[in-house]
Length: 234
Image 1 (cartoon, rainbow, N blue to C red):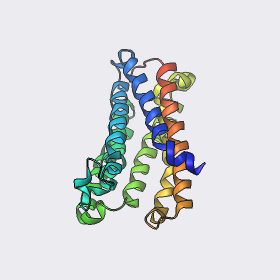
Image 2 (image 1 turned 45 degrees about the horizontal axis):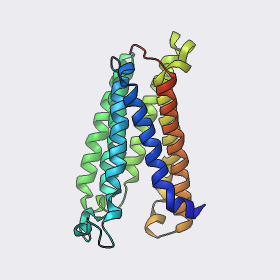
Image 3 (image 1 turned 180 degrees about the horizontal axis):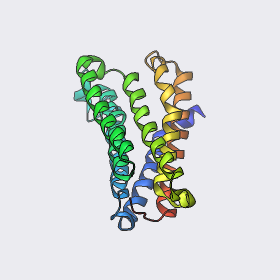
């Protein structure tokens, strides 16, 4: 299993990301009049984010990016902190602001996303050197809170409306369920990332397994939902 993860974990992750993004692009005309079009763009963004974020493996062993060796950009911590750990919660705060109906929920999601972004930028500035060498648990946890806030507000809204009768046909329901479960699974891991720096391979392989399972579940859900669901007015 460990050899399999070493060999194929990146390939499998990229594959399920491509599947979700391509499915969204092929069905774009179905959703282009709804807020779901932003989600499809986000899926494409995620693919390029993971693809470009893998640049670090082309730095060593005289690869074409070896000129970055020994610089702050040698590790890709900064990249995924910026484009995933900060970028994803900010996007979902924007997306749920678009699809929620309750004015109070919309305001909380909007200002929560803005405050999260301002805090994250300030925290990075104050911890500039560490930004290039590690992930920040506080940013991961606050990002998860934003995601949970968005999802819970959406679930409450459909429970209080007639949407509950056709929730299984709603793309936003599957998006909410998938991101809620994904962040619920992976967020606790950030508190143990110290073992990554200590090269604890038992933890590293366990971490890879958890992320691989979570990614397959999330992107497979996105792909299924894009195919199964039909556009709804936001």
